[in-house]
Image (cartoon, rainbow, N blue to C red; front, side, top):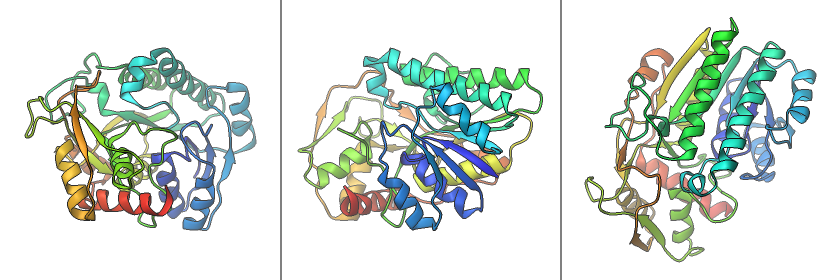
Length: 330
């Protein structure tokens, strides 16, 4: 298949491009480089031996995006492009609603117009709101706790309604949890522009001495050690789930949690990082962050049963690979 990957030079997108190429698919990347780097394109070529077609565009811009559909016989779309920081979404809600919703609407419109019937959407466990874990796909979606999560829930509704109105259109909504780690080559990983918003790249930069200390947001949650508990999943496992999803698409809408099914606290992750890599990560406890919840982990049984996908890599793999990437690249 020829697959358009939006946000394909970003953290999850770039790893998914590798897995798509390994499985003999053709890839076109659209990325505006807001939270990614053009150098990743060379690294993808070094890892796979293939240099995908690349367009530096913002997928909210329909006029610039449409020529890709006109000039390429696209079979499917995997949509990663979007703003993704929970805390930032609270302070910049308009930017998040515009970027994340308009991009989904523009892509949906062009898919329908040009007969592209396979669509995999990068959703999030935040759509569940604050509900007891393990989270299951059948749960009723509650009000999300932050604008980022709301953009994911609204995008899910946009795509679901598009399916209802267009016979033959097929969508998979992948609600994934907390991606960490890096490719085993050490060439690509999570390397955000500016100060990291996510936990793992902050940890690695503190370990490397580029940042003074890690801020742990809250230690008064009802968890094993008071810090937030999340379902951390290796980005390579996550990438493989996208390949399974687009290869197994059938008419209608399918929803899958993509996680390990295990919860790990912030401090458990930090301590694992220090133990596995033999480095110190100074941290301090600060107040809770707006929009965060105490515990969030998946019931991932449905993805295993229907897609034949299951996470294979553990916390030690995640922290080891993340540190290797930081040492080699950042």
